[in-house]
Amino acid sequence: MPTYRLHYFDVRGRGEVARLMFNAAGQKFDDVRYTKDTWPDFKPKTPFGQLPVLEVDGKLFGQSGAIFNYLARELGFYGNGNMEALQVDVVMGLVNDFIPLMIKVFFQEQDETKKKELLEKLLNEDATKFFTYFEKVLKENKSSEYFVGKGLTMADIVVYDIVDPLIAHKATIVDPFPLLKANRQKVESNPGIAAYLKSRK
Amino acid sequence: MPSYTYHYFDLRGKGETCRLCLAAAGVQFKDHRIDHAAWPGDYKAATPFGQLPYLEIDGKKFAQSGAIASYISREHGLYGTSSLEALAIDGVVGLVADYYSLWAKAYFEADSNKKIDLQLKLNNVDLPNLLGILEKILAGNDSGYYFGNQLTLADLSVYDILENSYRDFSNIYSSYPKVVENRKKVAALPRIAEYLSKRKETEI
Image 1 (tube, one colour):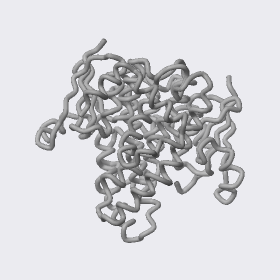
Image 2 (tube, helix red, strand yellow):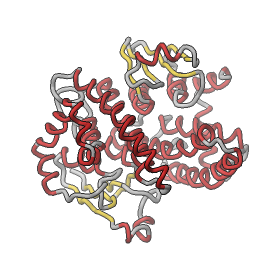
Image 3 (cartoon, helix red, strand yellow):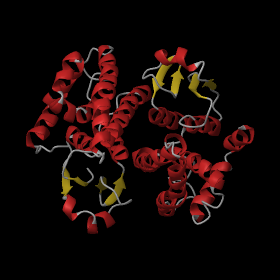
């Protein structure tokens, strides 16, 4: 196995899915976290001037999506075969469509009134739309409570990760979606993930 | 060989990279182009998640342009020759997706003042940033392709995303000769050349 270092800010953001996959697989990695003071020195060394960066045996690679796909391949979270990989990627795509809506509310909108409006929309209209899609995918997988195939894949992990902050704002948000709720429990039952979530601040 | 039908609007937009992948793979596919006036109606209801594109593989429907492009690329040798190479390819695919979001934001902005600002930023900051990175990658690879010695999803994604600016702001490209060389190389590949020669021109 290569030597892995994950370079990201000291937040969950676009790095947490990698951390979750490493922990789910029991794969050792260096969890390097930058502050706004330490980031400027590292920035010019990165491939694209951005984080996250995955270092594999000393070589640096950028783009969170690329990093997640690579780790899913290497750590066994991409399902079996190309068809299942396609299904995993479909879920990744849906999540990527949802993320900008979250970013707008939590990081971009400055006006307090507008922010409140957008948060309401996110927690109700947008969440309903996307959770309905997730529920549909889960329903279509007759072979398990996971999104794809019979085991844990990157699809389960990314959905788990983006739903987390929404639950913090609206505790009942997953309740109307029984399969999604069961899927979350499945993710949390992975021993590596369970231990990591316990220790995570 | 499975039977492929690709459903998207009658333009390049978010769906053209998939068409380029199918063309590069040399597979037969039905290129179903949906007229905007006819959408949504029955067409929207037929999609997996209310959006285009989707690919039908032996009648089973799969949405999400990125997922489709990756599937075709994996299936038909367009993803390089190692997992690390695929990681690098996906890095470029990710940069292209980021740029597409910026382009779309500028293109579809309704407020005309905001639109001007966004387009200025796109042409003066975002596009040069992207082209600079791409030029650097090409400088590190002798073959003229982004990665390895043959066409990959990276070359096709870049070919597609640069279509509009190559047509509308060609001057900027004189500073990125390797990007231009790669573009011509891709366009000259037999299957791509054939596909492009028959492709109708669309604004976006």
